[in-house]
Length: 170
Image (cartoon, rainbow, N blue to C red; front, side, top):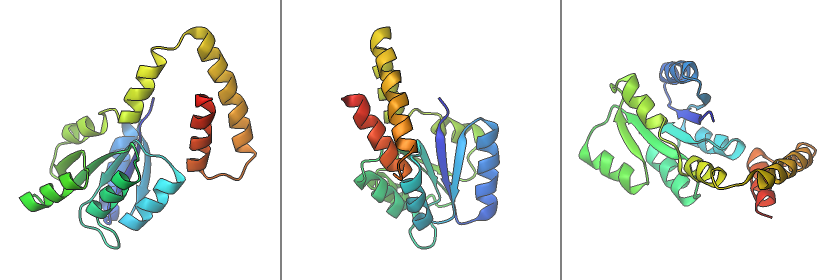
């Protein structure tokens, strides 16, 4: 299962560097260049991890993290910044950020935070380990039928995912 990472930074070179490194490690990478664009992207796709700069125009990393927390998204949020003050770290923690890294962190440190499975992934893997083969075959059939219905609708990707989850619960 490839993790989908949303990289958000207002500096193009930072975004491109992270995109290249994460893509080389087989992550699916989506990019945004400010907090408002990040929120719009999150309406289009459902990321597993949101890698955020702290200070950006329009909506900063703390504002995005607060929105993610309020929206009950299962996305893991990681701040990647040059600012190391205790007040910034405290604000990030209060906003629900899962990890706070400085931009001079090694690629290994960044990858270790990105590779931590999200709550959604852990729940999914736990659920799969408890399903017998007959039930799994039925679920796969329902997914195929729902997928066909979704592809013929004009629902947003987020609505499509919600439809699929609802169908699986029936």
